[in-house]
Image (cartoon, rainbow, N blue to C red; front, side, top):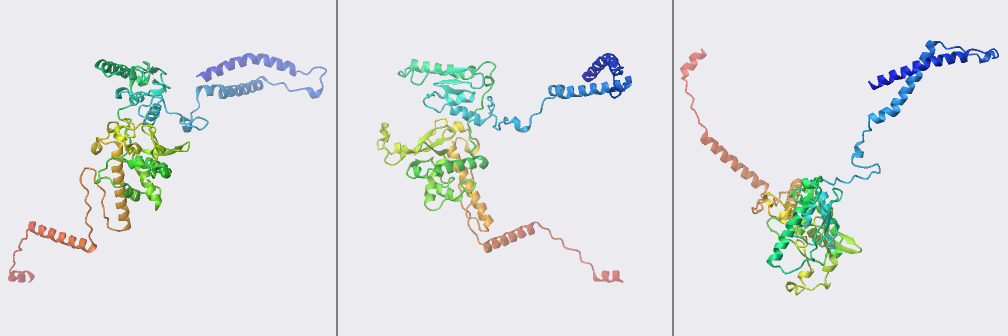
Length: 449
């Protein structure tokens, strides 16, 4: 419809100008008395002038529609690649409000990892609770909704009001905790999405059961820690308590795990250096070097351990407690207790596992799962090679694992024959035999004749 109106308007303007155009053209085309024969030109008829003018008007209309109207009415459709990347090729940052994203939650939690910026708080207003509602640490004991409503909340430090723990002080601390617990939600602006809803309670849960989730991460941690073999070979480690019926020794795991977990099983001296590296990786730590210093870090709570402080002969500068007078505990890395209190590798409530793993932290779950995976892989490898399996994968229901006896081929055939014989006897007990009636021979002879 707009094109028809535009065309009608153009026609009216065309017919109005046509009279003037025809008159002027006829006057200009009449040969003057002094003109030469070569300068004469045929006069256009009204029909020819009309067709020529219509052709020019059609070209102008087609050009105006293609150059001006279409870009305004039909926006360009973005390509699939432009939805996740800008023209420079770099991927877009995730949305600020993404309460379902485990990665963005850890990114916010990482901003609280600096001890100089964030001081210890009660569990009700800890860094985990603030991160679940979209807050990040932007200054000393100050949180902000960065990228959202941009509100800020300033909290008192841990050392500002240190007094004796009397009843009044405990009541004051409880009231202060309740106040900032309310600020976790109502500190956002009324139109902020983080005020309406935050992350779920199990957002901190680590995937340590499905091999597709834990196998790549365990491999990365193992390879990064193995690169620090010279720094960990003399370090004393204290792993989590193991149930020998469900968890294989670390040396056995190193031999039985497939290449998708350990790229290549070390041999000789490298094998013994790889045992503590795998032990550290099973407890959620990865290794890296910073300013030529070997460091272990947890990617869930972002706590770091400097390995130079646990080398033999190192003298700590901090005073030893009464329990560590001999210095043995001070120079031993407790692979579980070194995690922060809220870390799922240490805290079973933060891990929030269900079923048979309920009440266990990630340091207790992963070794059991990896042991089951290694036993099953060894059993399947033995079956493919044609040998009789010597061990079955353990069940995770708490029952004891008993190795099945090994039988020869002749013994198995004998047992099969005995089983078939017993089945035939049982079948005969339930079968009923009917006697057929005898026919006299004279009757048979008469029938033949």
